[in-house]
Image (cartoon, rainbow, N blue to C red; front, side, top):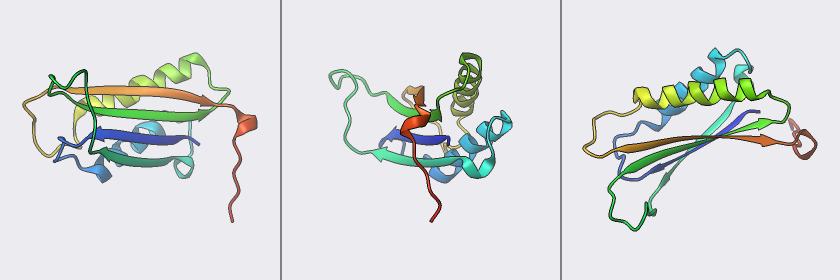
Length: 120
């Protein structure tokens, strides 16, 4: 833990997936709240999506950060703000786009008693 899931809209054709995951993991490591090898990130491009009724051409990146329960509200704020700044820098985009990109961070508690892990 933590686990990160990123979904992004397909019109972000120049998004460098590997670079984005590296930036996210680097941001999390910089908080000193996690060991690097505990961070597991994955990314998915959403081919089919709808914003509103389809009359808006916005793109999006939605990041979900799953944490084991027990983190303070202040720690969650630090993590969410750090990840949002990472997305705002747009280092992972190879070109600029003519449409807005909605950037969202969701911090989700996973109850410790409901998380199971083994190394096989």
